[in-house]
Image 1 (cartoon, one colour):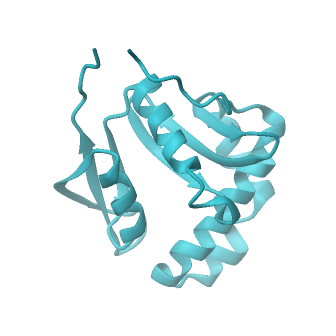
Image 2 (image 1 turned 30 degrees about the vertical axis):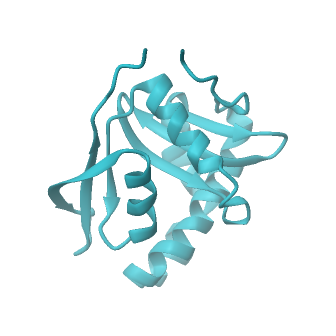
Image 3 (image 1 turned 180 degrees about the vertical axis):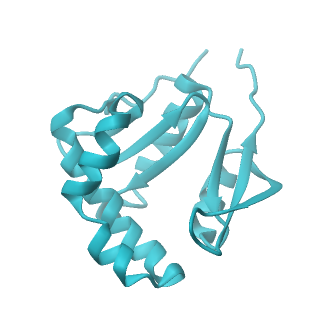
Length: 158
């Protein structure tokens, strides 16, 4: 028997993009500014309107939101790769990330992703959901920080 997925996850729409950008940018500043310490990028280049125009509009078909009346998180897929998974910091530790990743695993057969090596919290979260470090690394674009690859073996459910 396949478990019923959260009814709050749906495909993103154009009017969701500002909320998605807001969640991404705030999380990016909180989690990545301490690592990269790049004021120019975090507080000048990374802005809601430009992020929507130059990034989100192109990939809206791959975005899914957790929406229970308020969009509290989102996930971006590229076939079976999880590209982004973010939950608004105000709603973290409420099971929303769990619902999003389970949705990706069950509905999109998610089996791999890349995470910032220094983002131990994210790596721990992914490992709790069956993703394991592969030993593969690559540089985050235009930085000296590493991304690490995590992979999940797919299991057939009865």
